Length: 107
Image (tube, rainbow, N blue to C red):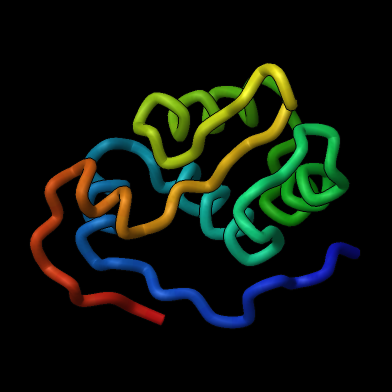
């Protein structure tokens, strides 16, 4: 079992609405899971990914890759090919990127 790094996160309401309207609901789940179990950087061969796939029932590689690619496309996460590391973007960056105005969040 992986160790939880953050025991409480704030999810901006507009980010959840954006995820719903753009087909990123499962991607949002992956994003939040990674935020809980990492400090913002995570190697692609980390055991966190194996645990994530088990907990969120993403058994097929293609489905998992599809959701990760959507997160990369929307710039919620970044990826460095040199170091093989995924970077989780902060919610403040996502708010600025998508021009979210409201600051209301859910715990």
